[in-house]
Amino acid sequence: MWCDSQTYVNPIRGGFSTGVAVARRFLRQKAEMPITLLSSDVTNVEAEKWASEKSVPFVRKQEGTRALLDGLRRAKVILEDRTPLAFIVHGHDSAAALELKDYIQNRLKWQEPIVLREQASSGKTLIEKFEEFARGVDCVFVLITPDDKVISSGTNDEKRRSRQNVIFELGFCYASLDRRSGRVILLHKGAVELPSDIAGIVWINISGGIAAVGEEIRKEVANLTG
Image 1 (cartoon, rainbow, N blue to C red):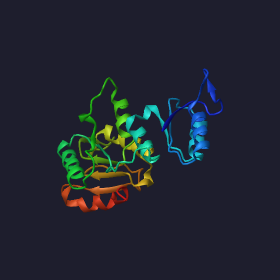
Image 2: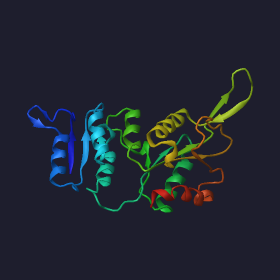
Image 3: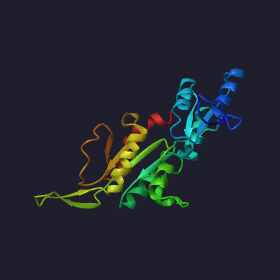
Image 4: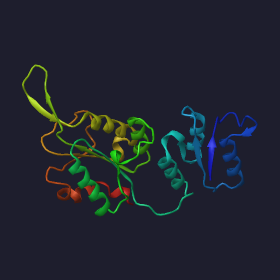
């Protein structure tokens, strides 16, 4: 079951029991009952702390449907077997993005990966759309391709770098999934300038194509398939 969470210290609000109070009551009656806590309050630190102490999945409503489903799976409310879900961050190299998508679906046998431009906006801004779809995924592949020309100030040295939206989205995923989790994988192509401040993330050179490094990618994501 899932409970809609409100303030932990106040078990009654508007005459109704809050989600945490209901969850506590159920756990007292049946300690092994699967529960997921769903909160609409982004500052609900106490409820999140209680959920952590009780090993109850805690999901904020703004994280979207996928995060809720992931919480329900972690609580074993949803028991169906599922393959990992990936998110693809990319710039102008649509061919590389499509090749990667095909590899994930047909070689790794994962779910169809999320490519943002293929998803409906439903009235959301671009960043809201990105936040909704990027949260709740198992793995993020970031394609760093030589899309933009850059000339360093005071020199005539010309370099190539990825689109700035790619770097921004990389940072979001870096913070959301954690650098050491192994869930953010960078695929770079050609002579491209790579950010210097994210050492430790997995880098794979796909200049020869996705298929050429398929086994290397498979090795890096093996921990996600159990």
